[in-house]
Picture 1: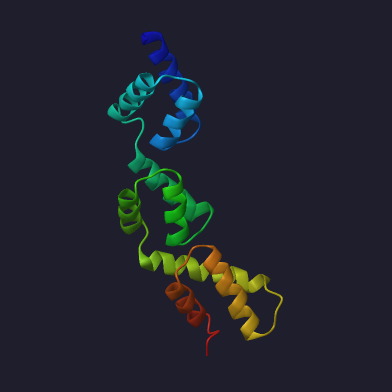
Picture 2: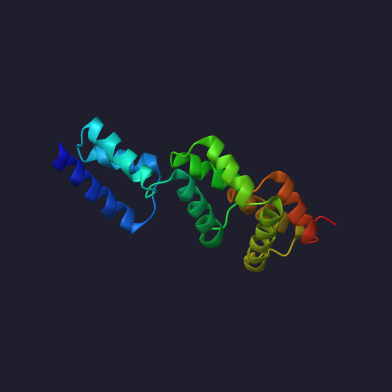
Length: 156
């Protein structure tokens, strides 16, 4: 059993060396590899205890990378984080601490400006529609979308 635990620890170390992962993903990978439940639990406990595996740190890093490299609003970020197996309360707390409404508004505005530059349409109505749909797909709330369209002077 001790050998299996060492093998599992070695495997998790390799996984985490590639990039940070949530607890659920690591657990699923260990299960897929065929490790018994007690080995999986012992390995997860070990990595959490030694602060090598943390859903909170993963959530913070995921959100930071999401905003920096794949800009998105709170709605899309929340959905992606929950899909990764992160606890809803943790996700809400991290979003509230690390992604203010002001930052989200600025991000929406930057994305809208970029989108406006590549839209071929000359009509205001078409621009409003295309930018609004784009921001909606990117996970921004209706309120932020309308504020952004106003800031771009498209609603006057």
